[in-house]
Amino acid sequence: MGRTMFQNRSDAGSQLASHLTHLVDERPIVLGLPRGGVVVAAEIASALSAPLDVLIVRKLGAPGRPELAIGAVTDTGTPQHVLNQDIIQSLGVDETYIQQQVKDQLAEVHHRQQIYRRGRSGIDTTDRTVIVVDDGIATGATMRAALTALKLSALKHLVLAVPVASPHALDTLQSSVDELVCLHSPIHFFAVGAFYSDFSQTSDDEVIMLLDKQ
Image 1 (cartoon, rainbow, N blue to C red):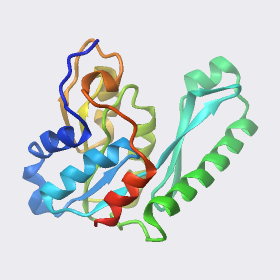
Image 2 (cartoon, rainbow, N blue to C red):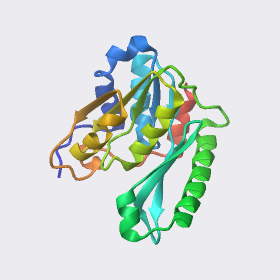
Image 3 (cartoon, helix red, strand yellow):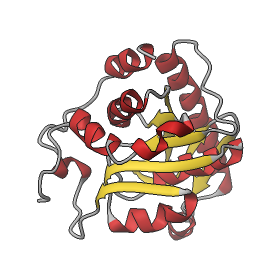
């Protein structure tokens, strides 16, 4: 098991925020991945007096193995998907299946956006500094889709901020951002929850409440 580093997601967000104060004059936008990432992001947004929004990414599951990601999809104004070609080729996943998964999961992205934002439009990231936040990163596949989509939105400076991540994930994501802030990247990385005393599930209602405060 990994060494516990955070009491809970709010504690992780508070610790992370102290390493992001150099961005306060940039008037950043903070985007959290639901659900747990929004709790971490809310602490950062509060500390930097920055607006908070949600960034929804959906996994594309393999045929008959929905837990295995063959890619991920998101929409930040322009729909974007990232595919794991190694897994796709090893499983022989055909293009028709992939396109149907992209269509279905994009529909779910839009549905979740409506639930969390309650009809509000997403915050325009054009020519802005954007801080993308999650509660931890194990593989980086989902985050890579989020960052790829954001790069298409003409933002000024893209920052990835996470409390803990695997070394492999950081290596994979480093080139996708202008700045990466990660408090801990243990060599022996098992699961994100191993680094939290309390890693209980975040509810939709909690995410909605945090976003409503903005």
